[in-house]
Image: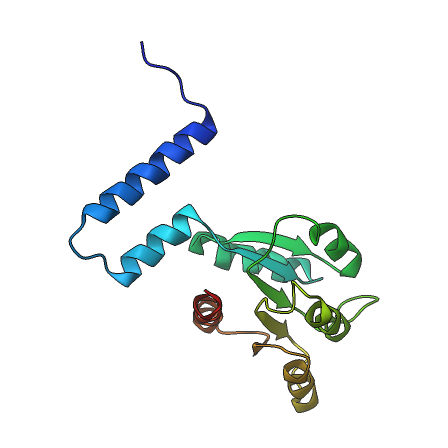
Length: 164
């Protein structure tokens, strides 16, 4: 009778076998490699958005892409997430209660570890001065609500690829 595997052992075994099989391919396309890597090591996105319907929409859009999502409705919820596992990209709204997205971005960009994380503002506040201020604070991109879903997905993929 074979030994029963724990969940961690099963995951380890699957990852090892997938890597071994990929290594035996004569040529591995970069897309194939990235797809496998994303499945084995999913990227974590931090979403700071106070609108519940927008949160749900982002979950429906981004979870099927294989991302792990962490949500904060405001700065007070954000503080509990900062001590957890690291994030790979941040999506941030401007119009948040108590502490604005601009203020949060400024603080994040002053932090020694968080300043290098790609930051995308996703906001309905999209006057020219808002967009300019977002980039001055270190944003990597700015998407106006309602946004184009394909553009959001592409922007995230590009910024994560650059970060790697």
